[in-house]
Length: 234
Image 1 (cartoon, rainbow, N blue to C red):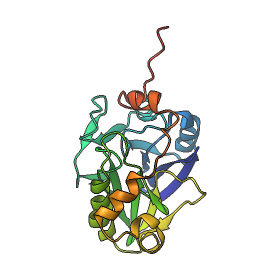
Image 2: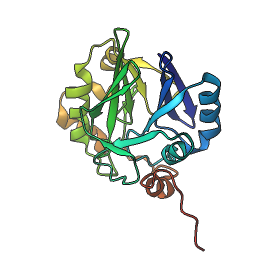
Image 3: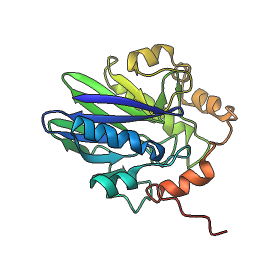
Image 4: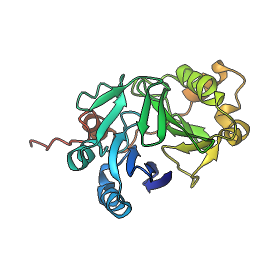
């Protein structure tokens, strides 16, 4: 397996590939980074099979539509996303096969109502690509796009934390320079996992008072159209 963590303005995109079969998958690709993606796929010689978003993003425009147009890949989102232009909607627990690799879509609502994480077991090691559900030393916010702090608590504590503590955690964003972690490390050190119960977590999330994402007005509508930005008529 080849795994590349690509960074763009606090956002992580992941390229995962099976070398033997020459197939690849992108998780949370960013439209502005298309030159990088083209170069990687050509230089590494991979056929792009899938491109997926872990939710409808509010802070950047997705490259799903452009990747499908250029490489003929299948584009995937959660069934609750309402993105009709995607090739297919994923259901929680659904498996994606790519060469010898098997990915599992985990429905993890909370940050948004359409949030998913992706699990991969390879070579005896577990990997979680957590999108905006679980960050390193933090979690996604829950104050827009049908966010629900109680649902986020359940998604993390009941589902993600059921995996081994050695599971690698690859988040969708980072704001402090972290790159990867493990579930065990987050259980021990993530402040938002140190709460006594769901009620304390909800109370914590309610007082965050965060500013709106910078591209929210453009990104949400564009991402519901697979990253196609409509020109301003004025």
